[in-house]
Length: 176
Image (tube, rainbow, N blue to C red; front, side, top):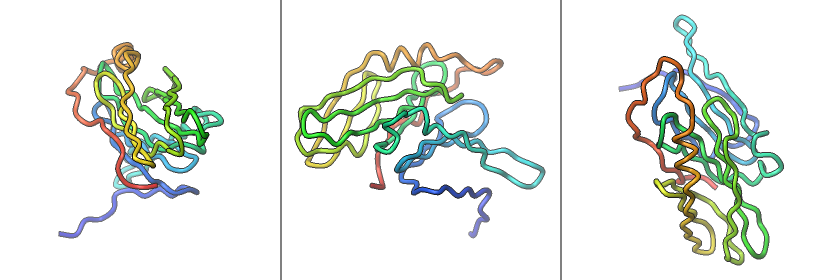
């Protein structure tokens, strides 16, 4: 069966990762790629559907060009978007983890130093106690961070909305 495309948006850079907010109000997706991170909400106008963009690239600061992956943290009251940037340095390999709520506000940022030469973080996956990072040169690293769970639990719920089920999460895959 053939389906029609509901909505299309065009960005000036490649999109290498896409994911859906695991729960919440209006449907929301996130995209990332070289030098960009964005939230998109679907808005209906009669029979037309539009993708409305909230550009989050500036929230990553000077590290935006090193964005490698993003995922939704499916814990707590409201989903939090987690983005990881990698800095190509000899040693230690430094990555920055930035947590952004669905309104586009940075709620937490931390740095991770990995003792790995010649590696680059390419993907991540979230788990309840932290982040799994993977990349070039066979890099696989587990990063525990209790603050991620705190951030999710402290995120304010939208007025008039119930918590909902968790679902979703994870990251990585594709691209590069």
